[in-house]
Image (cartoon, rainbow over all chains, first blue to last red; front, side):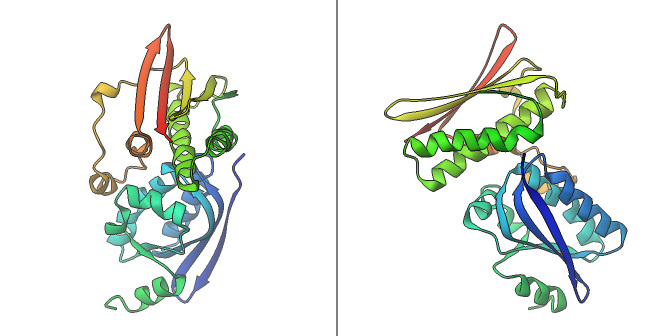
Amino acid sequence: MSQFDIYQRQYQSVEILELNGELDAHTAPVLEQHITQLIENEKYKIVVNFSSLDYISSAGLGVFMAYIEDLRERGGDIKLTNMKENVFNVFDLLGFPTLYDILDEESQAISRFNNPTT
Amino acid sequence: MNVTASTSNLQSVRDFVAQHAYDHGFSDQDTEEIRLAVDEAMTNVIKHAYGYDESKKIYISVGSDTETFWVAIQDTGHAFDISTYKSPDVPERIKQRKKGGVGVYLIKRLMDKVEYSTRNKHNEIKMIKKL
């Protein structure tokens, strides 16, 4: 069975989700639950740190596809950081780099939320 | 190998196929591409062919020759009609809050050849990658 968990923390007004393990159709509902919970709690600025994520399938990408518009309409965003090469390659195949803010470091994503013009 | 049509079996199946691919001489990147294609194909069977009925079975086989490696995934559920398939418009799907629908596109991008067939109520997707 796929191993996956999420460590959630907060930095100022930004919510950070650290993903660990493998994100597929079995584990994607766990991520979806975290994101819908954040939206319910009116937390619209989300950084997802992928540094400990070893694998992603389209079921994982689907979670980001389904909620990004809702967050952007509310003045927020999901920014994606610290991806391993094999994980980035999947996002890249689907053209995500032009649609999502994908950054090398979590700190860059936080500063972009704090200073949107930079 | 055969497994029940449960998403809890995705990891063991993709690891099984990836190990065979790696042992056959594929690079790390090619092995990752095969791993993902298998996952996407099996997820589609669970979701679309069987409608998440975990009592159903999925059959996985791998084979190779000097130039190619193939993976076949078989089911006995609803057949997928590739002739009606259109490549997804990802920005449009995002606008519509769609949770995916990009698996077949990925499989086609990741593998060199993909064949769908149905015989005697058995559906098969055969995915081929050149060494």
